[in-house]
Image (cartoon, rainbow, N blue to C red; front, side, top):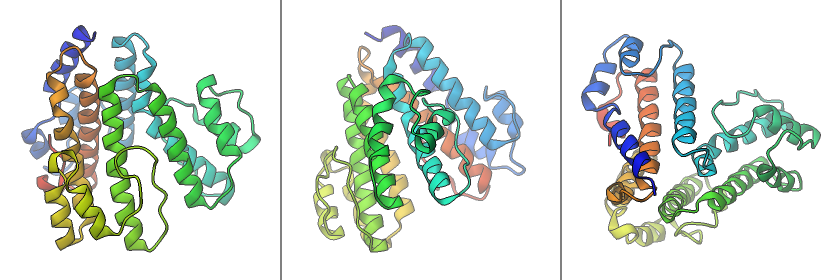
Length: 290
C-alpha cells in the first residue's frame, strides 16, 4: 500500500543525525551552520529552527501521502498543548506562548474558548471544543480532559493497526509515568482510558505489573527506577523502549510502520538538538539516540 512512501522515508531515516553529529553539535558555541549543512535550514533561533523542521515534516507527509488525514495524528499533541496554554491564558491571565505546527489555528482555539465561536474550526475538530466548553473542573482536571479529547480524535484517525499499536504504547507509557509522578506529588491522577494500564495502582504494584508488558521491555528501567527514583532517566529509557518495541514494523514494506517510526525518530532528533542547545555539557547518554 505504501511501497513508494516507505522507500522514501527509509531513505529519509538514513539522513537523520547520528552519534558523531551530536558529538559535533556539543562543541561550543552551538553550531547552527553544521545543522544548515545537514539540511535543517538556517536560523540562529532554536525554536524557529525546530518549527521550520516540524512544518517541513508535516508538509512532506501530506504531499507523499496525498493529503491522507492520518497525518494529523502526529501533530494533534501540539494542538493539545496550545489548547491548555490558551485555556489558562483566558482563565488565569498567564502568557499565551503557543506553539506553531499543529493542525488547528491558534486563533481558532482562542475564539472557541474565549467567545464560544467554533466557526474557524474544521468540522471534525468542533466536537473537541463543544465537549470542552461544557466541562467544568480544576485546571488539572481540564488539562487531563483536553488530553483525553485529543486522544479520542487521534484514535478515530488511526485506521492502520500499526498506528493503533503506536497510540496504545504511547498512552501506556504516559499512564505509567502519570501514576508515578502523581504518587510523588501526592495528587490524584486520571488515566487516559486507552492502552494497557486500566487502573491506578501503588508504585510497587505498578512496577510489578508493567514489567511483564511488551515482552518485559519495561522490567530493567522500572527496576532501576525503584533504586534511583530518577523519573527523568525513566522517561528517557521509555522513549528508547518505545522505538524498539515497534521496530519490527520497519521491516513491513506494505504497512504504515516505516512512516510512523520515521516521524517518531525525527521528533526525537529535534528533542536531542534542543537538549544540546540548552545544555552543551549534557552527556550523550542522556540523549535518546536511536
